[in-house]
Image 1 (tube, rainbow, N blue to C red):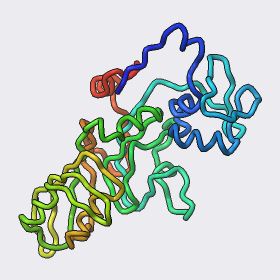
Image 2 (image 1 turned 90 degrees about the horizontal axis):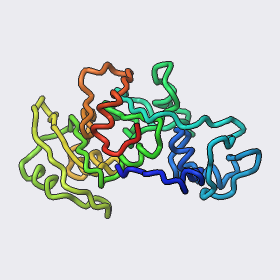
Image 3 (image 1 turned 180 degrees about the vertical axis):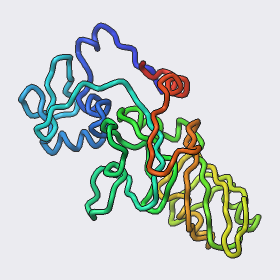
Image 4 (image 1 turned 120 degrees about the vertical axis):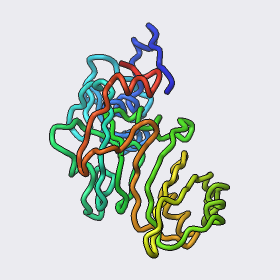
Length: 251
């Protein structure tokens, strides 16, 4: 993560409002820009019309009429997502969401990446939109590890195709490392590792190999492990550990 060095000039100028809202955990920078375009953001009782507006110490920022507090220290949580929850703050179809089911007492959080409705396991949550975006970037290079149950037998030829990368429905997927853990009748459990993590990547690639996924559990995201964290529980990552794993992160 790139360290931001504040000079006398940019300290006086403040920071762009989209970044401010992102660090405050309101939304990602991109979503904050959408909020601004929709007229949902005001600063010092004036409508914000452009994401390049700068917020300085003492400025009052409102989103949908509610004040936004100064960004707190960056925090990261491990969460054991159960299946059946959508990784979004509000689902237009009315399905239950991760953020409705979080344990009480947590700050406003956003996710680092997503797990789809039927997937479970480790989901990282943070109050800092800039950190979320940084950890999602393929350039970060963090390995995401999964235990995956598929219906069908897995041949060495199919493992080789995964390792070489595949194109499915004109989408190119990078190499996926997969090893067979166990075979139970018509099902096979795999350990899968990948670095990019496109939307529903594992399910789409496996379906293309005639291996429909019947269960998907993320067990690690970079250096952070699911471990023995109970289903539905959240646990904060120690600040010292977080700074060690994300160089340049502000204290």
